[in-house]
Image (cartoon, rainbow, N blue to C red; front, side, top):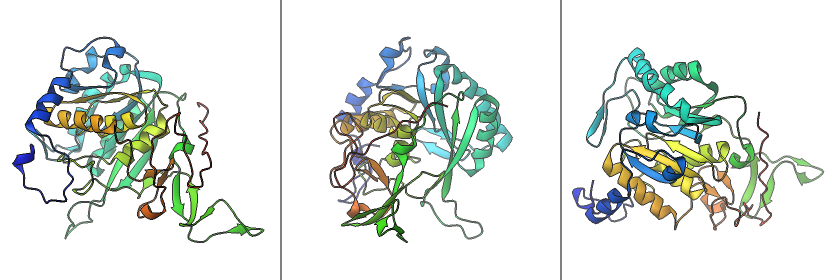
Length: 342
């Protein structure tokens, strides 16, 4: 949707495309037939139906796969529409194409697969037949209308799986900084928490229940008109936990581009595929903007912060790079300890 197609409030920061931007971004997209070498696909966005591309892509080039396929809902994605089906039919649809993605993954690769409550069970059944399922993350969306005769649907699932038992996971990179409610001291000194001028905080191990996310909305510069856009903070958690700088991240259902935007901000190589040209162009514009603004809302000083803690966060926000080591607000270097492969 172009700038002139919808009236927006003056403070609305939703990202849009002018006709000239759309044309420029469209010219930058790859289209089939694609080059056969992985080096030619680095940091590219493809406008195509990903299900028709899997057989043509290089083998074993992906370190981290992000799958956010259409949920089992009636949903309009630009000119395309996904129709709700029975759970058995959705499982068959997912099974019909998922095995063709696996040859693209390295033996050490990890994958995350998104789903809603209707599709999550079917997704798990398919994954369990082909990869090693390790956890189900449930995150709170806090968006949508209430229901009068049912519980409001405010959560989504993300299945975490690996190709083998030899995989990478960096727990230190995804710890959450939370305010200490009941500070405990030993010999008068804080135990496992920090005293700061902005309050008392503790770094906590990440769980598979996420309530610290904000779904993009009109006042956030990352927001677009895509109907199922994921927060950058969510993708930042997945990429920092399960990939190293320079690893190859693949998202074949790219949408408005959150995966590749976060990959650019944190120094990962990427390939994204989106069949809708408008959303693919939005993704390309967002990647371009990420070159000048590497910040991720909710991630500052090298750690993730719980919601409603903006006043306590460091003012300078930077991605994880060799030139900018992750710092606590005290200025003390925050060292990332890579976990051993398992």
